[in-house]
Image (tube, rainbow, N blue to C red):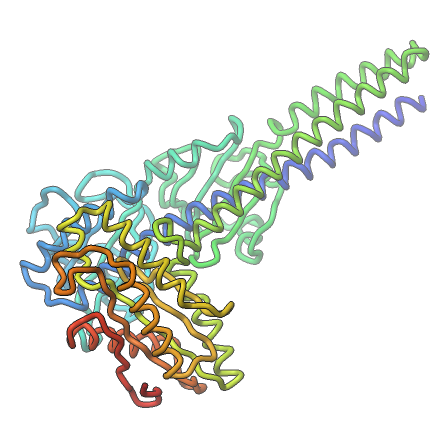
Length: 489
């Protein structure tokens, strides 16, 4: 009887341990899926930012739009989950997109995202529920942004579409069993779910204690019955940091505990035998413990592998793959933190905007492979002049880079910028389309001791204006464009 009581206690404890290990593995997988999907959305947002930036810098003429179309096609080809890119004018008419051919009479003014941007002055990106694409007939998830004219009036919408099919294929790569499910949810509506069903796309989840938990906690794990198909599952969830999107990863509870159940039955049978064969009891107990230790070691290895994968994904989300520099999103977060510190400590903060001169001509003459190599060399040269531990260099987009120089006055920022310009010239990168015969950069400097009413965007705006001044005055130079409240060089 004592052996049977001990066996029952061991089964209970093993079940608790098994559930805890399943929850940890589920949570790690939810974090990995969340990081990957958030990274895909962030890539599309970055592309939309670049398109809006290009649109707001040029007149929307037929020629300028035609020149933009190859860029849209190349962006779609570079990002697997991206189905298409579209630009609509203020009336909803298609003016340029990544499609090979399209009907210019089409109009998207009735789409919910278009109505939202037309009525809402915010330029933040909008993620919408899945819809059927009018160009391809496939299910897509719209990610859109408003375009303004120079006066801030509504000028149109830029749209990037995520392929539901590609996202579904990504979710299918994870081993979660026959009863498992993974869902990406926006404001209580399903964006995509595994197992896939068209009826689930855009479906609003009914109110339930599980939905309340999702709404009140940033992440967690619950043992609950699915409101979609009624299967009892162990559900882990994770909210994205930068978007109102929730990812849930779930395994069927019965399926997850099947090994434990069969092991428990077998263990009980052995205990009964052991009760009749006292002499062999020790051997069988040791064997059961060894198996359990091996299982726990395997789960720990899986957990460590997932942790390492999460760290790699976090690095990819913050750094530019081509140059190795921090990317735009990482720069924005560092800028806001440095700006708050400068406001608090009342010290100066400088930004240097950098652009490779005549880079399009370089690409046209030598090809994109050499163009990428040129950007890598320029990035290394610029990075080499930012010597202080808290100086920060990032790739801002395309051939543009940016320096963030805390505790630096105007004169100091100008010296660093000039050192960067000279460092690039010293590379002596051949550029026959340039009047210098070699690659060069133009730099715009802005410096500010920020007050309570100032914003980080003010620094970027003034540095960008200084950069364009350098371009206008002949390139290969450093310019400071003084603005009210800003320091002159």
